[in-house]
Figure 1 (cartoon, one colour):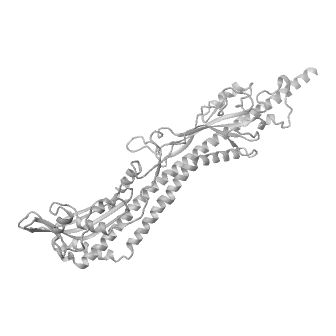
Figure 2 (cartoon, helix red, strand yellow):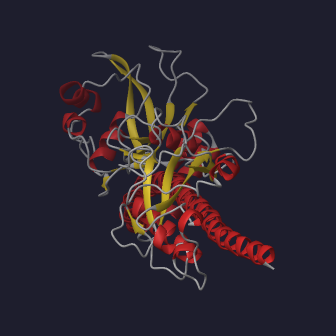
Length: 487
């Protein structure tokens, strides 16, 4: 009977000690899982933000393509209006164009009358340009700024929500050193997000402008609009090798200020000669149009103001006195361009927007971070007196004392990876123009709570495993990917 009672007493004490140790280990496992879930959720917030920035950047490129098309269409509409006016006046007459250059050119010349029949076309293009500009700067750029500004707070709020879901019975986790002993504490020990994504001006040298130009190169409608037609027979005995010319010149370009400019001109260059200057081309402007945002005024101020007609003065003499154009070897339409500058459409716009991108110095390293999650000893069931009597004396539980903590670390990162390898086999650097950002857990360094000295066991220091079980469980927790725990 004494031996049996002794065995029962030892077994009871063992059960009590095992109960305390088991609760501590279970609390640590639960805390590790919660830390991993919070870290992964924070990295996922970063990945979604970066992918959203990538979609914003690509949408900005699409709006620039749309703005280039709108400017080109407006330039064509103005070109058509002026060409229709010239066709009605017969300056030059359509029959002359058909005789010199063929019926197809004459039919195109006459078709401008149909374009001129669309009322308010230029006003509608101006409204479309204003809407795109408002979306680019008022919606997309503002959204990108808000994403970069609010991401740290959004990430922390998400991680605290995950912790609250894992511990619904406790108050919301506190950031940094918590003074309350009734809640978890969360702190960042290594955060590589600051400076990972930055905003750059779209007007300067960078990735956005070349990308937009490469995108617009796919559209022939935005490319150079050049054409040259010659009449087949000699015109003047003084210059028998020269012919009348029909020159079509135009194009859409991106100015240094970051706005789209479109110019379209067409002129009939009649070959003439006289005893003063010999052979020269007399330009008859057939159509012109130009659209651009207000920008440099130097070029426009230097151009002469061409008269509406030359009935009172010879064309070549006016050019000599006012313009100085090359009337024999030129390849453009200077008179039509001067008219286009005088009647240009001025649209108010803010040019190329700013864009977000990962600096080259940061592109080779993912946007990772490490967190430390700390649970006060008062929240452990073993020390809360959950209906069980704790052992005293030499059998007393000595793993954690009131005022100490259970501390775990977890790390995660947001990285860039293509869903499929590039066709050219080259490796693509991380960029915010492709939404290929993902999140994952990584091994943590286990730096411990910020500001705590190594091995500190006093009140408020990182908590330890129960001394009797530390060696048994340390390898299990510290070896798993995604959570690096202290000894």
